[in-house]
Length: 176
Image 1 (cartoon, helix red, strand yellow):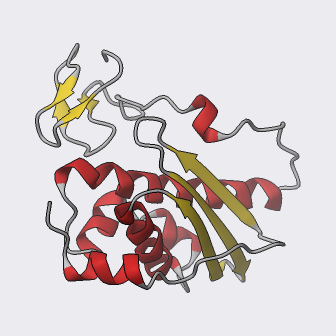
Image 2 (image 1 turned 90 degrees about the horizontal axis):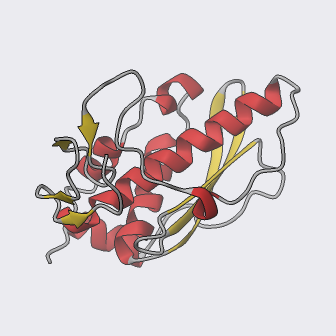
Protein backbone atom coordinates (compact mmCIF):
# COMPACT_ATOMS: atom_id res chain seq x y z
CA UNK A 1 0.00 0.00 0.00
CA UNK A 2 1.60 3.25 -1.17
CA UNK A 3 0.88 6.62 0.34
CA UNK A 4 1.44 9.93 -1.43
CA UNK A 5 4.08 12.36 -0.17
CA UNK A 6 1.24 14.64 0.92
CA UNK A 7 -0.37 11.91 3.06
CA UNK A 8 2.97 11.13 4.66
CA UNK A 9 3.68 14.84 5.32
CA UNK A 10 0.30 15.34 7.03
CA UNK A 11 0.76 12.12 9.02
CA UNK A 12 4.26 12.99 10.20
CA UNK A 13 3.55 16.70 10.74
CA UNK A 14 -0.18 17.07 11.33
CA UNK A 15 -1.58 20.59 11.37
CA UNK A 16 -4.13 21.96 13.84
CA UNK A 17 -3.95 19.16 16.41
CA UNK A 18 -5.64 19.87 19.72
CA UNK A 19 -8.82 20.90 21.47
CA UNK A 20 -10.69 24.20 21.46
CA UNK A 21 -12.08 24.33 25.01
CA UNK A 22 -14.80 26.88 24.23
CA UNK A 23 -15.57 25.53 20.75
CA UNK A 24 -18.58 26.91 18.92
CA UNK A 25 -19.14 23.53 17.28
CA UNK A 26 -17.90 19.98 17.90
CA UNK A 27 -18.31 16.97 15.64
CA UNK A 28 -17.31 13.46 16.62
CA UNK A 29 -17.42 10.34 14.48
CA UNK A 30 -16.02 6.87 14.64
CA UNK A 31 -15.88 3.72 12.59
CA UNK A 32 -16.28 0.55 14.65
CA UNK A 33 -14.95 -1.57 11.78
CA UNK A 34 -11.49 -0.02 11.82
CA UNK A 35 -11.39 1.71 15.20
CA UNK A 36 -10.74 5.24 13.91
CA UNK A 37 -12.19 8.08 15.98
CA UNK A 38 -12.19 11.78 15.01
CA UNK A 39 -13.30 14.90 16.82
CA UNK A 40 -13.36 18.28 15.07
CA UNK A 41 -13.58 21.56 17.03
CA UNK A 42 -14.63 24.84 15.42
CA UNK A 43 -14.30 28.48 16.46
CA UNK A 44 -16.54 30.68 14.32
CA UNK A 45 -16.36 34.47 13.88
CA UNK A 46 -18.64 36.35 11.51
CA UNK A 47 -19.77 33.11 9.86
CA UNK A 48 -16.15 32.08 9.12
CA UNK A 49 -14.09 29.26 10.58
CA UNK A 50 -11.39 31.23 12.39
CA UNK A 51 -9.91 28.24 14.21
CA UNK A 52 -10.26 24.51 13.77
CA UNK A 53 -8.58 21.72 15.72
CA UNK A 54 -8.81 17.96 15.72
CA UNK A 55 -8.12 14.95 17.85
CA UNK A 56 -7.88 11.65 16.04
CA UNK A 57 -7.30 8.18 17.33
CA UNK A 58 -6.56 5.99 14.36
CA UNK A 59 -4.28 5.02 11.54
CA UNK A 60 -1.91 7.27 9.61
CA UNK A 61 -4.54 7.89 6.93
CA UNK A 62 -7.07 9.04 9.53
CA UNK A 63 -4.54 11.48 11.00
CA UNK A 64 -3.57 12.79 7.55
CA UNK A 65 -7.26 13.20 6.62
CA UNK A 66 -7.95 15.14 9.82
CA UNK A 67 -4.96 17.40 9.24
CA UNK A 68 -5.82 18.08 5.59
CA UNK A 69 -9.48 18.63 6.43
CA UNK A 70 -8.55 21.37 8.89
CA UNK A 71 -6.35 23.02 6.27
CA UNK A 72 -9.19 22.94 3.74
CA UNK A 73 -11.75 24.37 6.18
CA UNK A 74 -9.82 27.12 7.98
CA UNK A 75 -10.94 30.64 6.99
CA UNK A 76 -13.85 29.27 4.95
CA UNK A 77 -17.36 30.54 5.49
CA UNK A 78 -19.81 28.07 6.98
CA UNK A 79 -21.47 27.73 3.57
CA UNK A 80 -18.13 27.02 1.87
CA UNK A 81 -17.17 24.49 4.54
CA UNK A 82 -20.49 22.67 4.11
CA UNK A 83 -19.41 21.90 0.54
CA UNK A 84 -16.19 20.10 1.55
CA UNK A 85 -16.61 16.43 0.67
CA UNK A 86 -14.70 13.24 1.29
CA UNK A 87 -13.57 13.37 -2.34
CA UNK A 88 -12.16 16.88 -1.82
CA UNK A 89 -10.12 15.66 1.16
CA UNK A 90 -8.82 12.57 -0.68
CA UNK A 91 -7.94 14.68 -3.75
CA UNK A 92 -6.07 17.24 -1.62
CA UNK A 93 -4.06 14.36 -0.15
CA UNK A 94 -3.26 13.22 -3.70
CA UNK A 95 -5.25 10.04 -3.17
CA UNK A 96 -5.60 7.36 -0.55
CA UNK A 97 -5.34 3.60 -0.92
CA UNK A 98 -8.77 2.10 -1.64
CA UNK A 99 -8.93 0.37 1.72
CA UNK A 100 -8.36 3.75 3.45
CA UNK A 101 -10.93 5.87 1.57
CA UNK A 102 -13.37 5.47 4.46
CA UNK A 103 -11.09 7.76 6.49
CA UNK A 104 -11.93 10.66 4.20
CA UNK A 105 -15.63 9.97 4.85
CA UNK A 106 -15.03 10.21 8.58
CA UNK A 107 -13.25 13.54 8.24
CA UNK A 108 -15.96 15.12 6.09
CA UNK A 109 -18.67 13.70 8.38
CA UNK A 110 -16.98 15.10 11.51
CA UNK A 111 -16.76 18.56 9.92
CA UNK A 112 -20.43 18.48 8.93
CA UNK A 113 -21.44 17.40 12.45
CA UNK A 114 -19.37 20.23 13.96
CA UNK A 115 -21.10 22.73 11.66
CA UNK A 116 -24.49 21.28 12.57
CA UNK A 117 -23.60 21.54 16.27
CA UNK A 118 -22.62 25.20 15.77
CA UNK A 119 -25.85 25.98 13.94
CA UNK A 120 -27.93 24.25 16.62
CA UNK A 121 -26.20 26.21 19.38
CA UNK A 122 -26.65 29.44 17.43
CA UNK A 123 -30.43 28.97 17.34
CA UNK A 124 -30.44 28.71 21.13
CA UNK A 125 -31.95 25.25 21.06
CA UNK A 126 -30.66 22.77 23.54
CA UNK A 127 -29.93 19.40 22.13
CA UNK A 128 -30.65 16.16 23.91
CA UNK A 129 -27.82 14.25 25.53
CA UNK A 130 -25.89 12.62 22.71
CA UNK A 131 -24.36 9.19 22.72
CA UNK A 132 -20.97 8.92 21.13
CA UNK A 133 -21.10 8.33 17.39
CA UNK A 134 -19.00 5.20 17.79
CA UNK A 135 -21.70 3.65 19.96
CA UNK A 136 -24.45 4.19 17.42
CA UNK A 137 -22.72 4.48 14.05
CA UNK A 138 -24.19 2.24 11.40
CA UNK A 139 -22.88 2.98 7.93
CA UNK A 140 -25.51 4.62 5.74
CA UNK A 141 -25.92 2.82 2.44
CA UNK A 142 -28.54 5.06 0.88
CA UNK A 143 -28.01 8.76 0.49
CA UNK A 144 -30.82 11.00 1.62
CA UNK A 145 -33.52 11.31 -1.03
CA UNK A 146 -32.01 8.69 -3.33
CA UNK A 147 -32.91 5.09 -4.04
CA UNK A 148 -29.44 3.99 -5.14
CA UNK A 149 -27.16 2.31 -2.58
CA UNK A 150 -23.58 3.45 -1.99
CA UNK A 151 -20.57 2.01 -0.19
CA UNK A 152 -20.14 3.83 3.15
CA UNK A 153 -16.36 3.78 2.68
CA UNK A 154 -15.76 4.92 -0.90
CA UNK A 155 -19.16 6.09 -2.19
CA UNK A 156 -19.17 3.56 -5.04
CA UNK A 157 -22.65 2.67 -6.29
CA UNK A 158 -23.77 -0.77 -5.13
CA UNK A 159 -26.63 -3.06 -6.00
CA UNK A 160 -29.08 -4.08 -3.30
CA UNK A 161 -28.14 -6.99 -1.02
CA UNK A 162 -24.42 -6.48 -1.71
CA UNK A 163 -22.23 -7.35 1.27
CA UNK A 164 -18.84 -6.64 -0.34
CA UNK A 165 -17.66 -3.52 -2.17
CA UNK A 166 -15.45 -4.44 -5.10
CA UNK A 167 -14.31 -0.83 -5.55
CA UNK A 168 -12.56 -0.52 -2.19
CA UNK A 169 -12.46 -4.17 -1.20
CA UNK A 170 -14.48 -3.56 1.97
CA UNK A 171 -16.75 -6.03 3.69
CA UNK A 172 -20.06 -4.44 4.52
CA UNK A 173 -21.47 -5.47 7.86
CA UNK A 174 -25.08 -5.50 6.66
CA UNK A 175 -27.09 -5.90 3.51
CA UNK A 176 -28.60 -2.74 2.12
